[in-house]
Amino acid sequence: MSSPKKRILATASVLFASQGYNSTGINQIIAEANVAKASFYQHFKSKEDLCVAFLDARHEYWFNELYDYIKKAEGLKSKVVSSFDFLIHMNAKENFRGCSFLNILSEIPGDNLKLLNPIQRHKEDLREFFKSLIADEAISDHVYLLFESCITESKMFKSNQLIERSKSIINNLIN
Image (cartoon, rainbow, N blue to C red; front, top):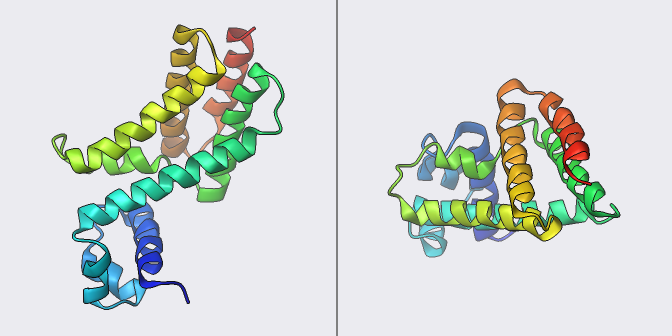
């Protein structure tokens, strides 16, 4: 059996994804993780602290998966297109759950910097990812925005159609 901290984080990850951050209570997390309340508070001072840990873990997981997915692609255009294929892969794997960071963002007040900061860092790192592949900043920003819109659209419509269309756009956009 895994440690209480790992069980708490794993349980929160499932619950935040399935029912949202605001609808998930600490008592439910404690019960479903099968830990004592004291164990929860030994590892996390609050639900917000748990959410920050969730976002940090999700960030690491997501980028590791992305880099692992595109590592076989050769050449700039192939890597960029492969990153969009990664979205299709994640949609299949996670049943179109969308972006964990945007999902949390939609539930918090704009002045909640404790949760806003890791969300912003994730998006900044994603933007940097595209800048590392595409030298032209205007084009890399265009691709980043296309990628972000694909995440939202695919969740909303439970479809990869826009992702497939975006791959065609990329083929015309990048030489």
